[in-house]
Length: 187
Image 1 (cartoon, rainbow, N blue to C red):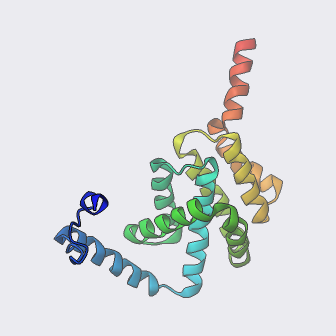
Image 2: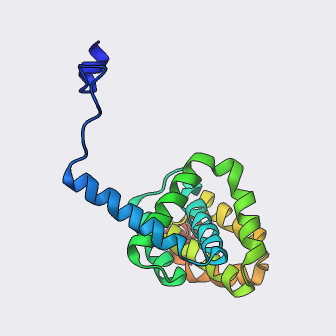
């Protein structure tokens, strides 16, 4: 009885409350976006789903996807994926939730599937985008770099290709910052 009052339903036989006009508008918007995504070619949808998941995997390397990383993912999926912002937001949220719920189980499987469908240029762009997402907070931790390296390996990037991307983000790498700070202290 106390739980029913807590959740606002004193009568167990009472129908659930009707959605407010704002909630109904949000639900209608989401349904419209899903219908629009369903109109996208299935191969392209598969690519976008894998791409977004790989981004979410990178962002979740430290077991937290912060708002900066989520916004960066949305921007990347909009730009590289060619989706309107509303669709990109929905794709990113789905990928983010999947990565948070199933990361240990799905990481390799989804990345392998993405690897089988993406071109070499798309794979390199995906790894570069992963770096951009992880660096959105201006720091790439050792855990994040390890995950980025694993993603690059699973996508078949060579060490020189990975190093080329990594150089672009060296100022964000915490280990590089520490090394520079030690050199400054010593000199």
